[in-house]
Amino acid sequence: MDLFIPSDAEALDTLGIDTDAHIRLGVTLDRLGRRLGSRSVPTTEAGYAELVAWVERFGALDRVGFEGSGDLGVGLMRFLRWYASRVAFAGR
Image (cartoon, rainbow, N blue to C red):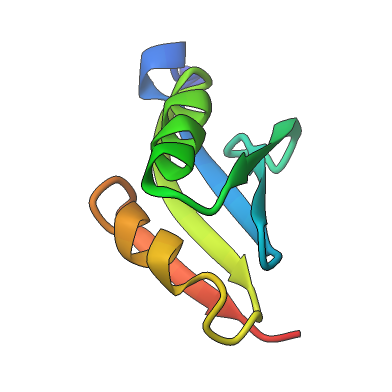
């Protein structure tokens, strides 16, 4: 039996988001749950685009999980629905 090991182009990443009034902190994980890195961006559309571009350097963005932050992450959540197949909200 062959072991399937995806290439970098086929890698699917997960992005976790912690929200704050003025920044969004993203941490990305590979499909095995290994941390690939973290990045803070401003709460602007340009900041959101920067976050997506950064995550996609590691592979395709597959899913996003938001820390339960009320309405602080709504703008980014809407933005990311264009890029990720699954976007979820996690309670605190």
